[in-house]
Image (cartoon, rainbow, N blue to C red; front, side, top):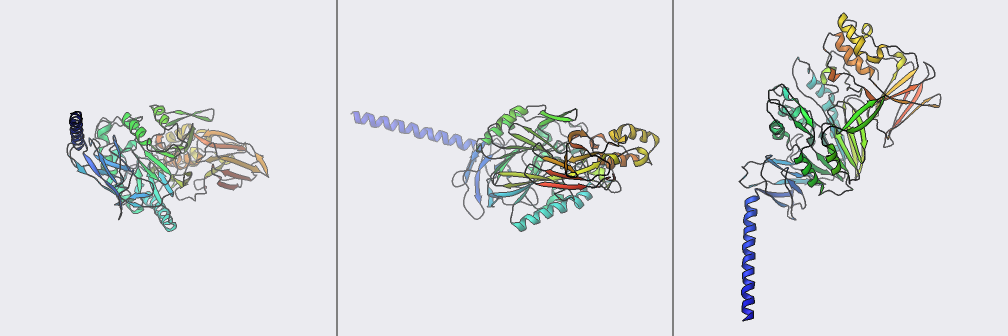
Amino acid sequence: MVKKKSLALLMCILMLHIAGLSYVSAQGAQQSTVSGRVYVQDGGGIENVVVTDGYLFATTDRNGNYTLPSSKAHGYVYISIPSGYEPVGREGIVTPFFKHTTQNAATSETINFELTKVDNTNHTLLVMTDGHFINDGDKRGKNDIAQAKSLLLPELKRLVTEHRTQGKPIYGLSLGDMVEEIYWDSFGYNDYISLMKEVDMPFFHTMGNHEYSATEAGDWNTAKEYKKYLGPAYYSFNLGAVHYIVIDNMTCTNPGDGKKRGIVSEVDKDQLDWIKKNLSYVDKNTPIVLALHVPAFRKTVRNGLESYSLSSGNWDELNRLFSDYREVYYLSGHTHVNNSAQIGNILERNIAAVSGSWWFTARSGYSDRHICNDGSPGGYQVFDMKGDTVSWVYKGLNLNKDKQFRTYDRNQIHITADKYCPDASPEIKTNFDTKLAREYFHASTDNYVYINIWAWDPKWKLEVRENGLLLPYTKISTHDPLKILAYEAMYSNKGERVYGYASANYTPHFFRIKASAPDTSLEIKVTDRFGNTYTETMVRPKAFHINMD
């Protein structure tokens, strides 16, 4: 009798358990609106691949299968590409790590990802920002596409060819502002993708402030076009031993009138939550590279010296997410200057623009000098990843990578309207002399030498010798005189408006050295944080002119 009761009780428990499983299964079937498989080309499934819809996460099982109860709010599902793989199906530069959903939120659908094996333990990452392609005919952006085709594309294609010959993978990362929202009628996302297609390497994109629509209102709607063509606004991927995260660190405030545009620099809560979950899959010893458009750290210059603090917004919340990681790099654009800031375990490299100040400042018939606001040549940064060792170099367009600084003989610099913009009207000449020539309106005979070291950071080293004697130097903030000559003087001479956002700004990576005489030669040696050296024998007097090196 006891045995029968026990058996009946056991059967009752079993039935309840089965009913419970059926309920859970039914609930799972109802909620798992996206499922699929991540598999290797001509092979089996790939285990432990992270899959997300921008809110929720799943990982693939040993057969490569996943299920995700997605609300499909963003309209896509994407993977964090695992190390040693690349997605299959890339055409041109858009890397297919994401796929758009095609059904409504209540309808289940299957989304698969096919990958191919690639040994990217050692790889190169080419990082460029602020292309500002607009193709607007005879307006201020004239000549941007022609310059891109003559300066930028040949370099990128050459790099791809060199790497493929060496059997080393190369990838591209854009930090935003590849197009401009108010010029989409002349150059939109399709045009950008078409322009870059011949480069033919996997690219990853970051949303910039000019990627938001000017004719939509609010942060969500203004990002729709970007997501349609270039994919998620925030995501991650793995190459070799490095984990990469790309975020949208802006809230767009455009009213949608096609004219007024604005952003607030911050990382919204959805992304902070997503980053935290994403990092739960990443070992603390893994090097982290975070791509964002607006710099996270704000530079303040007083008495010629710079200091750094958090930009306005909730950056402290973001930084805390990385506090336990051994090595963290923030890569940003937006400013059209080179700058480095170290706070705690985070090093931010704010990278100068591939468009220079803007393409129009060096358009055909003007200076033909492609220079950023800080005097850096327009260019990009090349990262060399060897296992978990990270190194980089800034590469000016059409310049040898060993060219990392420019020297000026201050005695030879005297910038006046009469000398450099003689054809300007009296009013423009007065404005140039009193405002645009800045500190160089005054001649100097103090035998100072200025050195602008573009990608300088605190771990770089400068040595200047005169007749074998090591000279002291002072780090200063000043304007780059060649930038003034190439843009402000050239535009003033033609009677054209000089835009403040494209003009020379105070640059803290300048160094001043006092020579003993006006005609002594100097031996200059610059060593970067990786031990690479860059040298120049500066023969003085060194002439100051538009074609100086």
